[in-house]
Length: 143
Image 1 (cartoon, rainbow, N blue to C red):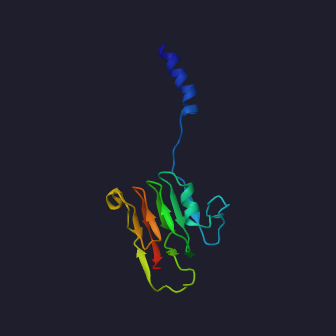
Image 2: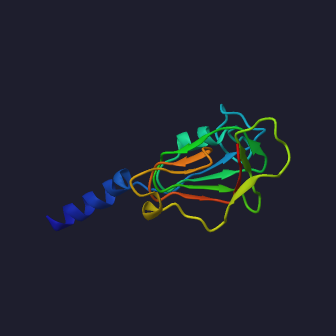
Image 3: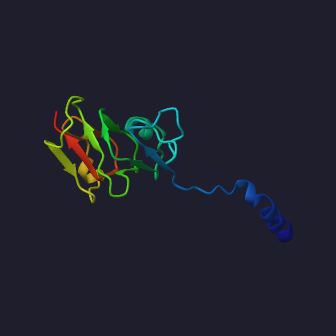
């Protein structure tokens, strides 16, 4: 009987074993929201990138200016400027200079104690409405 159980486990284990790994997606001002979100074919908007994230995933945002209000409603995700790049999120499509930007440091983590019962919001541009979010390496332009 024990031999049958072991044989059953050896044969059927690969069918039920699921490897869970975090995915990595990319956003670029030159991207397209119809793309797959790869480094070669990035999404255009940060919100599109957020929409495909699952817990544990990372969204890498390439340098450039993004004119959108970002809502992060997925828990335990990382949203970051790619490498040493510092993407800008702006509420003013007419502004092109770097004045008036608020910097989100590279070591900021919006954990549940930071977020608490209410969303964390910066300048009305970024709202973190989930716990365990890492949001770092950005510049936010005051509206």
